[in-house]
Amino acid sequence: NPNDAELNTKMGNLLFDSGKYSEAIPYYQKSIQLQPNNPDVIVDLGVCYFNLEQYEKAKEQFELAYQIDSQHVNALYNLGVVSIQLGEVNKLIKYWGELRDIAPNSQQAQRATQILNQIHQNVEQGAGSGQGQGS
Image (cartoon, rainbow, N blue to C red; front, side, top):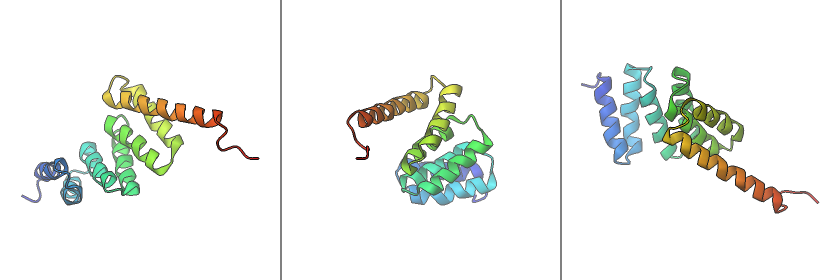
């Protein structure tokens, strides 16, 4: 039944799990059309766009999921990941700070902390090596 949100989500998930992101998108879109307030499906759609390197579209989906549920762990994590791709460091820090506040023991928060620490170390090493300084 094409008007069954759950069935469309399952089809999208099967294609997603097979790495067929562009084929999963219409199923997720239909599911969202039928059930617009499901942040899990919206995040999955965003991840499809992200994996297809359509970062702005991915960001839109993650932001939509975040608007529906500001404590959605995967929305916050993926907002941080897409912020890295888009060079939006301030947003990365904001979203991952929220993630660590609401779910400090989650795998996503732990991974975010590792990445933030790496970024911090890279910045410190860059500053210490004289890179980026004018003459």
